[in-house]
Amino acid sequence: MERRGRQQKDALKIHLLNFDRTHGIHYDPRMQLTLYTDYSLRALLYIGRTPDRLVTISEIADFYGVSRNHMVKVIHHLGSIGYLTTIRGKAGGVRLARPAGEIRISEVVQATEPHMDLQECFNPHTNTCPLTGDCRLKGVLYQARAAFMGVLAGQTLADLLPPSLEP
Amino acid sequence: MERRGRQQKDALKIHLLNFDRTHGIHYDPRMQLTLYTDYSLRALLYIGRTPDRLVTISEIADFYGVSRNHMVKVIHHLGSIGYLTTIRGKAGGVRLARPAGEIRISEVVQATEPHMDLQECFNPHTNTCPLTGDCRLKGVLYQARAAFMGVLAGQTLADLLPPSLEP
DNA sequence: CATAAGATGCATTTACAATATATGTTATGG
DNA sequence: CCATAACATATATTGTAAATGCATCTTATG
Ligand code: SF4
Ligand code: SF4
Image 1 (cartoon, helix red, strand yellow):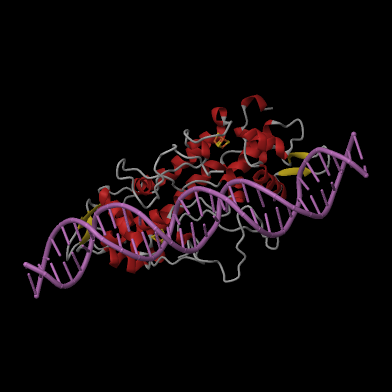
Image 2 (spheres, rainbow over the protein chains, first blue to last red; image 1 turned 90 degrees about the vertical axis):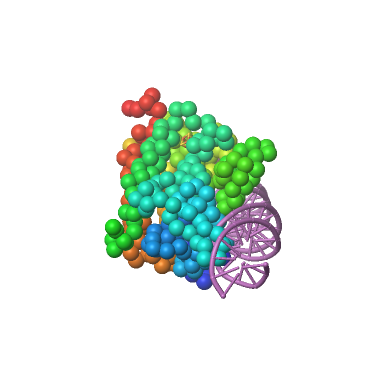
């Protein structure tokens, strides 16, 4: 399936490094979270909205119209790191392992988005940038990332559920 | 060449959706800016550090040890959007088209990172998420992105150059 | 006018997110 | 007690696009 759908049937597929000289635009960026993280959050939202019973993976995948295989791994992962309780066997399913108010969004993103290296120098093991030592940009990018995560740290799953579900 | 180098010679290359059951970690994330943006900023830093003369693209590419082809496109783009003055012909080269103090980092990132769609729903044309309407997560992500860009908006190229270059 | 620079277009490579498939394990309920 | 419905796990395949490579054109100068 396609990553984010195609713009239009005949929209020119142009690489980021090339330019659509006709329209002066380019397509397909980064600065995005993976679909994996997206699905992780969506799964938590769905499960959080259904606190009264177990839900199955198929049910979640069907609701969002996404690959069941993908969702299987998402759920399994969320279970393995303690956000979900998964119950096997007939009549099995999943539910939150903790109160929604104790599931911090920043932590979910960090657990599902395996790294947050905005630039090459963020990973000292693979960095090759000669500026690393005295680069002020690096510090600014760290600040920006901290600001980003700071907003997410201020929210829990409970804050994101519809008001009708608040206790 | 490799995107960000290899962790280790024999480090397991495991897909994000699979897990290294031995160590419980996974590799290769997102939440990163493109190398294209990286090179754009590096080029500006280099040119900003050399205000007294024209510099050539080859010189910049050599300094950072990166693909000259890539840098050619980066420079051309920065020129076409008004950050650089490029001079063709023998003894040509590039220099800043504006004072470093008027080159805002957030604007450079926005101009080089073609979109900033953190999740599928950020692009209404391709969005399929059924939650879009009443999803509170969406608003939180918008806030987080704004916080990120806000930090970058507070800095200009002049702020990132070494103190010795300050007027 | 030879040469050194940037401009431009297009082809190729590579990484990896996304997806698919196959099989194993557990529990229930009829 | 066994057929079935759920999650668990491993591996293989596909598709996209970032990154890179290459070939050619244009411009200016010494
Ligand atoms: S230029 Fe600065 S921020 Fe960019 S990779 Fe190099 S050290 Fe890091
Ligand atoms: S769950 Fe919310 S934030 Fe995620 S794609 Fe859907 S509408 Fe957007």
